[in-house]
Image 1 (spheres, rainbow, N blue to C red):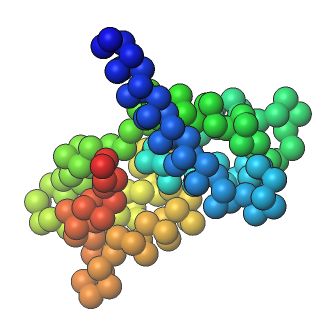
Image 2 (spheres, rainbow, N blue to C red):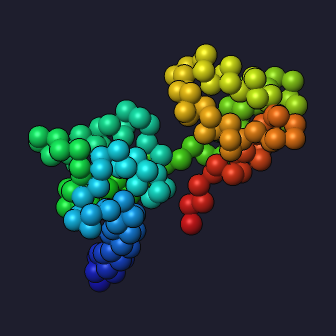
Image 3 (tube, one colour):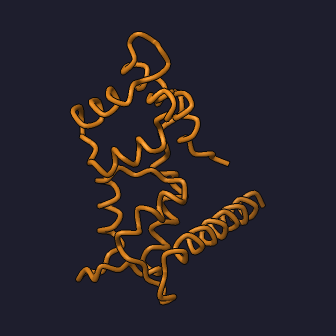
Length: 164
């Protein structure tokens, strides 16, 4: 009896995931032919609450691409792979407290903010550097225009994915 209830619950979860995946996929299916441009897959996956690294994203694309890549991904190939990703809760976002600690490491004087210049330096010269486009996108969202600085607690609150 418990197995039936559990199976029924799993089926409801899977049905809900299928609905969300189809909804996200259809936004980018401009031809209404159950395909999307491969360049949109990252956006679709992120819209479903997943945050894969670039390497993980490339692996996922390789898994759903045709044997002879066409530049398009078919819904029939994407659906089972994305359902499995969601069921396994892969590519979860980084928790808020971890993001806060990372910013605090960059702010040893504990001011609660980084200047625009500091952030650019850290993001383009340390670790895996941001591209110019990524940097501009981040700055447009993160920098307070009045102080020309990043109040990182506010920025983190804006970035965090709501799990509900």
